[in-house]
Length: 205
Figure 1 (spheres, helix red, strand yellow):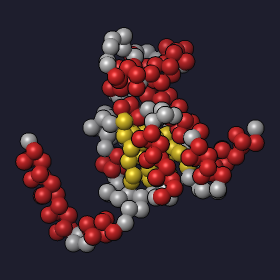
Figure 2 (spheres, rainbow, N blue to C red):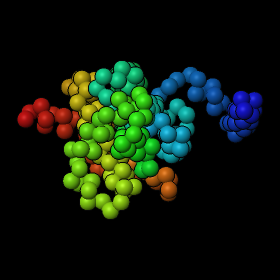
Figure 3 (tube, rainbow, N blue to C red):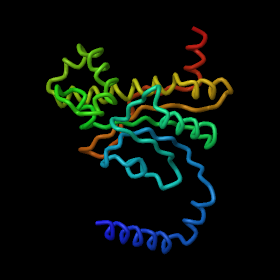
């Protein structure tokens, strides 16, 4: 399997060289993405592919169920680098329907360490129990919970000291919440965008 992977890489590299001889030279010279993508580790939701972007156009952090933990130093380090070093303008938090992490968070069975990681989703499930109960089936309730998890993640990213410092120095950065449909390949905007104006209103209040 490894040899097959290496061969596919070689074929891909050769094809890139044929199509654009300077492609890798340009890519190696500078990393200047416009987007920072926080997504799920699910192999069916690769950021570059679903967003139609080339390597170098999106800086990526992924974890199980795209959970934003305030103590996740991996995510916070990537966020800080994206904001302070790469100067990204758009941050995208993207979940997806049919998320295995969301499913695990709603099941009454042990999942090892994942149970600790997914605890924020279980809290959201309890907090929004009335809203979720209005959905007709478990799949629909889990998909709704996946949306709520994205919206909550946008809020949590916006509340980090990293973003508050960036907005305080007038950085024009916006955080968007998207959800991806495995069944149709489409991204949907959850209309929960947060930007510098929102931060200033919250500070004033």
